[in-house]
Image (cartoon, rainbow, N blue to C red; front, side, top):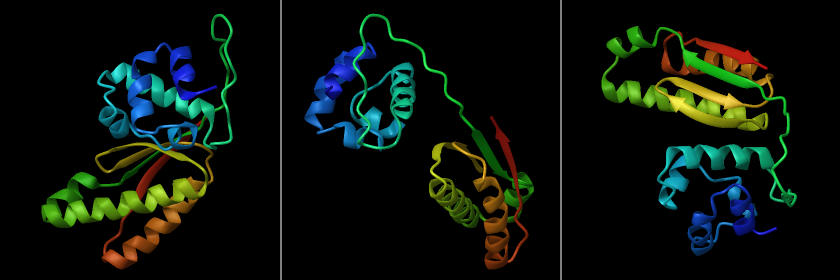
Length: 167
């Protein structure tokens, strides 16, 4: 199945030409972000969310080829784990640092957490201020705490995170 046929199966065939014009194939599909979809001309938030959900459902390997659909699409149940991690005391921290220092610290924090999530095969869903929301398995939550302790030492202040995991 080609990407155009896959888009059609989602009811989003109007984007097939933009995907083709930008050489988006199944190998690239798993790497697309919300911003990439906007750049491709997918202006509707609902369409972007539908595409991102369908991309995630395909899996993360380019070797996974979607199965052709006949008739109405059938539902599939999958176990998903959500991880949410945000810095403790962020408001007080933001009042004690210059904006540039705060931006740098949040950047280092999200890079650190994103790396751990990626190492465990997770997918960063979004950053919300000082928080990271990810989808995958739960082992990374423990490593986030350990890595944050190391980051605390390098910045010279205690940093902790609330990490919630829900199946």
